[in-house]
Image (tube, rainbow, N blue to C red; front, side, top):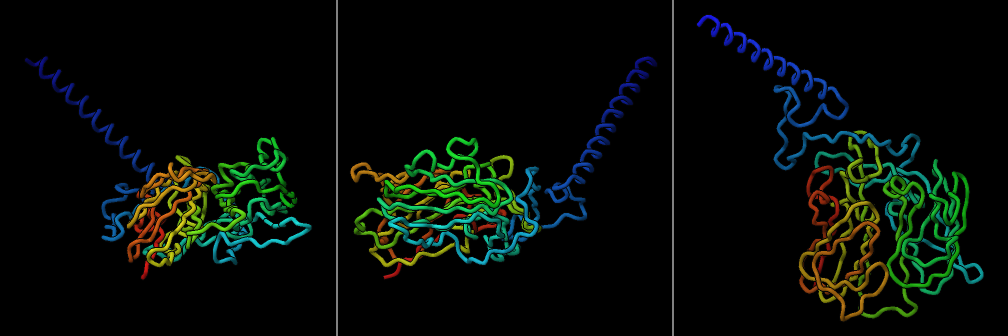
Length: 377
């Protein structure tokens, strides 16, 4: 009996030692994690006396996303934008029958969201074309010959690719690897010139270090109209979908990308809801929306109130008998969809992404990829 008691006592002491040691290791690990950058405000890791109760309308108010390990977009010395809106129609000069445009790539701080609930103004550090996000709209007619004089005022080399347009190989802009041209170095100018062969919805963007430069803002719409004006469309509106990773407290900005730097802000034509535009439409009018997936994430865009038809994909018309009638269209990165609908009912209807995190501003709803269509009599 005495030997049995000694065995039980030894086993008990060993078990207690294991439990106590594990508890100490867990406590030390928690303390170390709490001291790591980005973990100090993670839910459930604060001391019991320091926990805060989020406001009822801000359920994620105490959550702080850790900053990405990826290097941020350089922000020192970058000035705030003087342009108020992005995607403005770019003027041109006519020179010997050629439409001549000027585009300059440069850093700029862009207001993607005014003050919203507990958030301050959100000024993202971006790389822009002509100081606006998205870049200016090039709008021409099929058959035009255009010349784009491009100047690089960024700290890194870059180029312009004409996404979806049929151009000569030396105008295609693939500069990394240097297949169709060498990168345009900081301070250099490069001239693109080509005839526009197709009508439709296209866009342009960097083709150097694309995983960073495009999410930093280097893209803009390129719309080509047919020679003869189209009948029956009362409102033609272009929507560029983009994503951003911004620290609201510091303004530091990272190129949004899957896993490495998940976005916390989402914009339509450079603005997050409720700063997006409201379209004014009369009942019975036909509306065309041109969606452009300019970022790295897919966006299933859903319309309230009425269905739409897909009339073009990637700049190519869909034959009338082949058109799908839907209320949701998934716009993947690089894709373009033209959809049309008739505003049948009065009211204010919304078009929004149905990945619901994409309709938040740093996790606060409603925000992100929402715009309204106000239909009146």
